[in-house]
Amino acid sequence: MAPTFRHRVGMGDPHAHYFTVELRVEGWSADILPLQMPVWTPGSYLVREYSRHLQDFTATSSSGIPLDWHKQAKQTWHVQTAGVSQVQIRYRIYANELTVRTSHLDASHGYFNGACLFLYVPEYIDQSQRVTILPPQSDWRVTTALPLVAESGNSFTYEARSFHELVDSPFEIGTHQIIPFTVLGKPHTLAVWGKSNLDYNRYLPDLENLIKTEANLFGGLPYENYVFIVHFADGYGGLEHHNSTTLLYSRFELQPDEKYYKFLGLTAHEFFHLWNVKRIRPSTLDRFDYAQENYTRNLWFCEGTTSYYDELFVFRAGITDVRTYLKQVSEAITRLQTTPGRRVQLLEESSFDTWIKLYRPSENTPNTQISYYLKGQLVSWLLDLHIRLESAGQRSLDDVMRLLWVEFASKGQSFPEEALTSLIEKAAGCPLEDFFALTLRSNAELPYERYLRAFGLQLTVEYENRPYLGIRTQEKEGRTTLSVVEEGSPAHKAGLSAGDELIALDGWKVAHSSLKERLSHLSAKTLVDITVFRREELMTLGVRLGEPVAERYHLSIRKDANEQALARLQSWLGKIEG
Ligand SMILES: [Zn+2]
Image 1 (cartoon, rainbow, N blue to C red):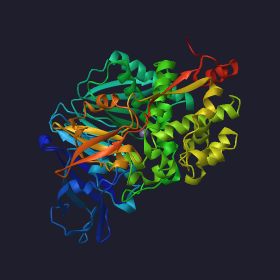
Image 2 (tube, rainbow, N blue to C red):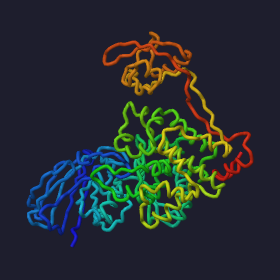
Image 3 (cartoon, rainbow, N blue to C red):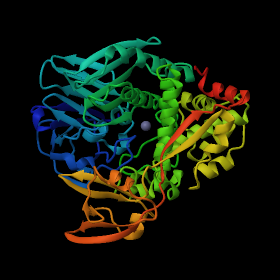
Image 4 (cartoon, rainbow, N blue to C red):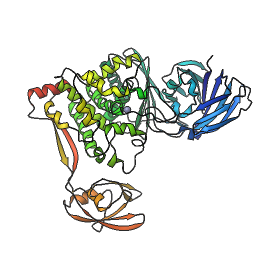
């Protein structure tokens, strides 16, 4: 008989941010009970060492007799069972990190990802797990995608088919707003914690529309029920799960339209992940190892392609117009083309090294890295245009998603990590070796121009109205410091360094708020004096200003586009109004 695992989660003094957790193991037969705590939350690729928030660990028999235990490693405990088959583990978890991938408990609510709270026995990770939630007050309710299997008084018990499912099902507990709704015959729940300026009369129909638009790509919804947990607070983020998602968004950033569309984009992004990455997933992200990094070169597809589709779905749902959509793509181009690191890091490298780079930014990040979300989004866009062009409009990236769904995900299988690009070629029906060599495995500029004219589009560049210096600044407590010095820039060549406190330009005080304006009165090739404090030492450096650099890119429909190009554009974006 396999052992059983029951977790109980209490929150007696929520304002102190402590979850009280109990794990009861029954039917254990070995002398040692090995327990581990995950070091990361799937979907957020950084080792976060959750065991650092664990304290007051105890182990007893069912009759309360203490059992010996010792720590084997930072996240591993070994309990000496002394022959008993029922073991109770108790501990407390400090939970005061309000992000989508961590846990947060205060007097207003409790939220957690299982990875931050629960212990597992590696050998029995596929064993079903029960979780009983004990809210501190009778008016607190529980929302999760897991099925409720028992309820008595103020205790709610849920069942997960495995530890994986438990970790993949976040919980929201409190007096949050619960809005149930049905789409395509499937029950959905919107659970909202926090006040905001969101117009629900607008969001609910838009949300339903987005769900239908995404389902339409695959021909239906592959779940029994789905939960959106939304935190309106100060922050931004989203995390995908099999049958749910958590979104964190700034509470007063839901208006005007441009900001609202960003929230819809986040919603569309995390929802699309229920297919792309949760079900359509590379073999490297099939069965998670919670004890260490799980490497993949395919996050450009899992995240980048999802980023390409998020704004596109909002557009396809008829919520944004062509102008807005092209503006969103233009902003992505601007972000990539103004990041010097695009000349350094390859897209596949960005994915593989996410564990040590993307989630751990430093002052040198813009010089050495590109985000697989951002470049992956633009590569996915160009890939879509490439396939449409090569197949004379007969195929598109949609066919790639459908092939991966039909051949692997719909059967519960992952696709082989190494096979992604050849599977994309198969769905596209054209050779893509050169395309991928250029976009995934080289740091050459993306070939926008190769596709734009064919689709009746043009990309124009707006240059800065000032000579190039090459620093980014930030202001804190009245002091302006250099947050980034761009590699190869005039500032870099002159010896300026990130961390320097900016004091004066040509002998006159200058600050974060006045720097751009002051530079705009100067011309390129001028030699200027920049005065900074570097670790309390005052120094003045001569900087030769450079020619203005690109500030913004604009994607627009060409006035001289021919009929064939407009037909291609229409096959990509549908009927273009106006
Ligand atoms: Zn994502």
